[in-house]
Every structure is written in C-alpha cells, then in structure tokens.
Image (tube, rainbow, N blue to C red; front, side):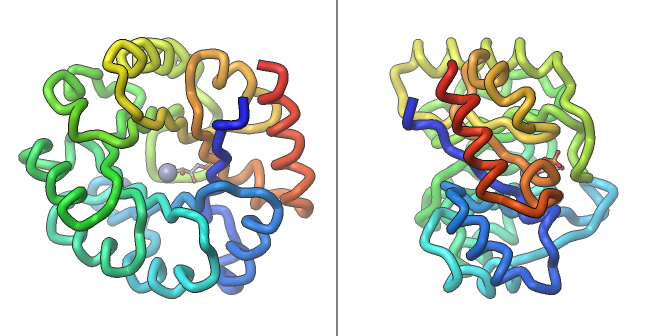
Length: 221
Ligand code: DX5
Ligand code: ZN
C-alpha cells in the first residue's frame, strides 16, 4: 500500500546538526518530519519550540508534524502555525476545551490531531471526528525516545481504524513510540498508516537502509 507514511521523529536526531539531519532523512525517503514538543510540565522532559520549527522549515518540503506534549496548548498553537507547521496534534488531557483547540488549529491553516496516551480512553473522539485530520496513538508513555512498544496499543489502533473507516472520513492514523523494522508490519496490519520512528532511524548510521527496510516490511501487509 503506497499510502503508508514514515515520519522520523527528530527527537533522536543530532540537534547540533538539525538542518542537515532533516535534509538527510528526507533524502532517505521520509514522508513527514515528526517534531516533538515537550514542556517539563505535561511530560517530564524539555525539548524544542517554534523557533526550531522555523529554523528547519526552509530545509525540507515535506509536512512538519508537530506533536505538542505541553499544557496548556492553545497559546502556543499560532506560534507553530507561523513557524511553518503543517499538522499540529495535542493530548486531550492538556486542553480544557478540546473542540475549541481543534478549531483553533484549523483556523491557523494547519491539520489537526488528537493524541492518545496508552491509558487514555478513546471517548474523546466521540463528538469531534469532523474536526480531525489525524489521530495519534501513543505506543509508549510520552516524554522520551527509545522506549519499548506497548503491545496493548495494537487493539486501540484496530478500534480507531474501524471508527475511521465507518466515518468515511479522511483521517490519518499515526502511531508513535517503539516503532521499528521488526514490528512495523504488525502495526500496519492493526490499521495504522503513519509511523513515527525516532531511535529506529536516527539511531542508525544509514537512514535510507532503515526506511527501505520499513517499506519492505509494509509491502508484505
Ligand atoms: C515520545 C515521542 C516520540 C519519540 C519516539 O514521547 O512522542 O515521538 O521520539 O521515539 P522512539 O521511536 O525512539 O520510540
Ligand atoms: Zn511524538
């Protein structure tokens, strides 16, 4: 299936050479750049903000997928839109008014996504499917790269796949955490179409070899 998308997470890139890293990973076949924003409040880690998004924007043509692990979320959304983000997703626990935050993202000209932690129930989707362009299922607890895939996420992915298909809407189903060559086919079988991978790609010397190996696995699904 050619509609699978590989989204390397720059969390595991060399931050001292970020422009070069994103150019290299796109040249190696990445479809999307996944951009992890952590605030040392919603999650116990601190990463990068709109200034860094703006800095990498001229280096790549592919969409920048901003994953906000911050609380509160609303104030920072226009800043990321101005910095060139194409997709902005947030965690329901981090917004007082989920519907309003989703509308704000689209008003800023970006695609909007909701992110579900391993223990976050899916009922937050019940009344907002029409405002969503992406659903992101976390297969690790957010905050760090290099953690192991929590296999319980596969059931959740299947459930969300059924929801999306039943809705007839064009909504991406993304998975984030512990995705690697060895498990990507199983995750795709469960119904995901967009795969975030940080350490599995940036942790290896040859990005193209990893992305090609992922695509070979996806071709078996
Ligand atoms: C974790 C981040 C992920 C992280 C994934 O909170 O949202 O995007 O970079 O890293 P890996 O692929 O190494 O599990
Ligand atoms: Zn992420």
